[in-house]
Amino acid sequence: MSDFRADLHCHSTYSDGSLQPKELVALAKGLGLQGLSITDHDATGGFREAEAAGMQMGLRVIPGIELTANEKDHTLHILAYSFIPEHPKMVAFCERHILSRNARNRAMLKKLEEAGMPLSEDEVISLMPLKHTIGRPHIALGMIKKGYVETVQQAFQLYLAEGKSCYVSGDPFTIEETIDLIHEVGGVAVIAHPHLIKYETLLKKLLKMPFDGIEAHYSQFPAHRHEEWIKIAEAKQWFITGGSDFHGAIKPQTPLGCSWTRKESFEYLYERYLLNQKNF
Ligand code: AMP
Ligand code: ZN
Ligand code: FE
Ligand code: FE
Image (cartoon, rainbow, N blue to C red):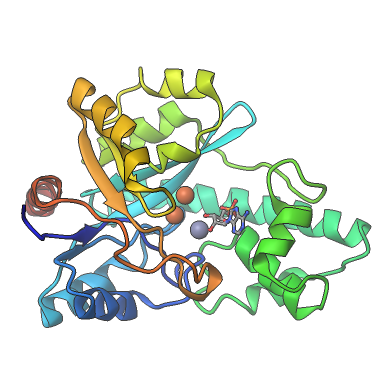
């Protein structure tokens, strides 16, 4: 079997990762990976820096993003690949996400204040050097700095996870709108970490939607848990991807490259990107 490995799911300082795009590329190259996609939450700003670093170091990088979508009260992460990050429709989509996130972050900070844990927006923003996608992990870091909790995990478990007292749901777009946007900008839409979906009815609905792929290989689950998703992908003729969901210091237990996409899917996605780039 080929030893080709491309990690198509990781986060940079453009969202809640702790490494810059070019540092991610250098790490991937050092680990012997042959391909990479940085999939920041609702942001594509790291791609060109990563692409340039990849060209210098000899590592192919494809555009990626992890978009947040909503289905009633449930949040779903959708990965998209191979689109052109500068496509005006993608840029506008991401801008709307940021506006919605700003309002949501403020609502969560208000809840924290009411719970006796004041934390200002400026204090959270100061933890975010690129001032891009700000979310719950940054609020968690602010809470640590203020001494309210000791770890990010604790901030989530006690206050910020879905259903906890300071959680606020956000997200301006439905799953259908998100898939449509991805297709409009020439990308492919992939169900991220399906292993984490808790609701059977949501899963059934998703499997009837026009996705193109599924992230069957995901770091947090043993190999036998990937099989059911591989079977689903094969039955639907969707392609199979994999990735670590590496965040760096924010989630130190998950190393880059610990889950990966095989050559066949990667080549398809890379060719599709080149074609989009040529026609843009
Ligand atoms: P947001 O997009 O602001 O809702 O934040 C989502 C991000 O928070 C995820 O991508 C994870 O990186 C992180 N996250 C979600 N749940 C947890 C958890 N229980 N512990 C630590 N980090 C989490
Ligand atoms: Zn994240
Ligand atoms: Fe995710
Ligand atoms: Fe992720």
